[in-house]
Image (cartoon, rainbow, N blue to C red; front, side):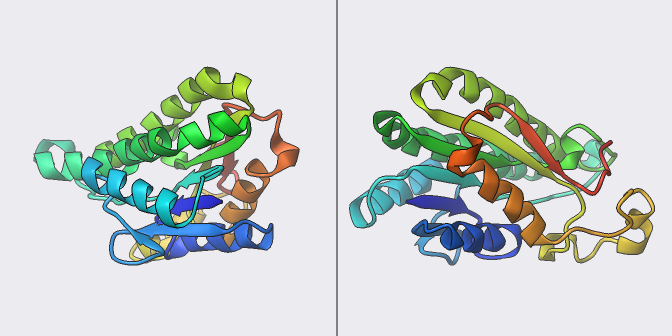
Length: 220
């Protein structure tokens, strides 16, 4: 079984569809929707969701940590809650979900974990210190876990999308951003999903601790 956090819309929904096409039973996690509802920033909510998944659906062998939010603003004016909400959702939530299901994978001696980071994790910009810190943290988490559990047949990788056409990016000026994208266009959620789909496959068994950029060359 596969679990996709933030799997009810945008990139997450596309990932869930792609994994279903590969034959996986997919459980989507959302704050107010999905197959199982959970606030990934809340440890008790995550624990309850994982218990529900195990009780009603079985063991988890693929996990895609996709849930994410933004609370943009200059650091000087950023509130504690704007910092904490983003880091807790984007980074701590990924850690807690991973910790909660990795035992299934380790006992099975096979599993796939994919963390959805961002091009800004390495190509930073002003006004997103909380988001950037959380997405860069995901890359560090990816590498650390890859070394911890790689010997048990479990791979941990990341994808780093660039400017993808979703609800989260709808308010941004696509025309202006395209100037910085060598591909000359914005990306589609299905293109990120294709990368995740590959990393979750048996063919990607020797790829571990890697970050696959899906950004049209934006981070080059």
